[in-house]
Image (tube, rainbow, N blue to C red; front, side):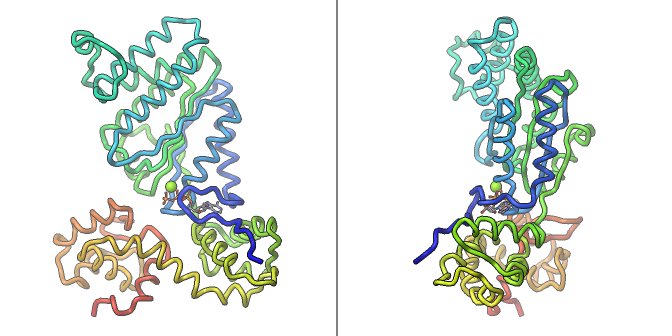
Amino acid sequence: MKIINPYRPGAGLMPGVLAGREELIESATEYFESIKNGIPIQSIAFSGYRGVGKTVLLNRLQEIAEDHDISGYHIEIERTSSFIAKLSDCCKKFIRKNSALEKAKNVMGAALDALKSLEISYSPESSDFKLSVQERALYKTSDLSQGLQDLFCSIGEIAKKKKAAICFFIDEFQYISQEEMDAFISALHRANQLSLPIMAVCAGTPEMIKMLYKEKTYVERLFVFPKLEMLNETEVAIAIAEPGKKVGLSFTDGALKEIYNITEGYPYFVQQYGQILCNQISTDRNITEAFAKSILEKYYDELDKNFYMVRFNDRGALEKECLIAMAQADNLPCNISFIAKITGKTTKQIAPTLSRLKNKGLISFENVNEIDYTVPGFSDYIKRNQSWLIK
Ligand SMILES: Nc1ncnc2c1ncn2[C@@H]1O[C@H](COP(=O)(O)OP(=O)(O)OP(=O)(O)O)[C@@H](O)[C@H]1O
Ligand SMILES: [Mg+2]
């Protein structure tokens, strides 16, 4: 009989056990407790490569914040839509939620004015304020930073009066535009200066950290920057064995070690491996090292088909060549002059292609002129397809 699969490979799917994130969860919880008690606190910007578990951690932190009675708002930044519009929608929800209860009408009025001004200026089509042309002209501001600061200050005042707190949970933060980042950071900073109970937890690829540091000198004091790492051997063992236990699986130490070696502690791979293992089990529910090894081919087949191929196949010809050339480097990150040499181009010629690959989240610039894949095992995937290698 087939067993129920307790593993959850997929974007943003909460795993059976969120392994190895206890320390980060503990310190974020302290931040939530602090802001809830009216003590201003830094925001959190955690970074990590694709599939390392940013979204699931962000969602878990939002649950914890809400358990602490903090108003949590989830925003996923997309390149195609305005972050500020989504942010002002969240502020609108907060104002609505509190409008009936708020006695100090002037604070509420200021918040609504700030919201109107921001909406009319930056998303006039979506605005649901019914205003005449003259009124619109009156509210319109040309300074996004000022508009958002006013909004944060006024919703912060409401929160403070109500002994409440607000936290924005922002995913894919690296996709924010420069102008929006500037406005957001300034508004958060102003709220922090005024000891207003507003904070943010932002998740993004390592690119996000570089963008934030470029932004403002005070970013360092406004945020803490934890880095999400791969899981270590013990954490992989927990991520595999604990959900397995619930469906009657047990693992020898050798099997768990082997699974760590195979998945390299990459959370998405751990879930994917677990799922394949469940599909391959016959009657014996005790997983040995030999069994763990025996499903390796199936595991790579699955990863190649569902993980690497989708990233590789959609690329243009020169993009593919660059990805292949990277696999031919002795070490990663590798210098872009190496990629130029292998592809027979100049560094200038490949620069726009590398920039496209970066924007699509396939590679990252590590140091000046050095690049790496954003997911582990990509170079092995290329090497499994020997015929692609450039002679
Ligand atoms: N701490 C963890 N322990 C076990 N599994 C995890 C852990 N974190 C994430 N996973 C699993 O890894 C996979 C990827 O998680 P998630 O989508 O959160 O990654 P991500 O960093 O947001 O990826 P992306 O950058 O592509 O958005 C999911 O299948 C999830 O269940
Ligand atoms: Mg994600």
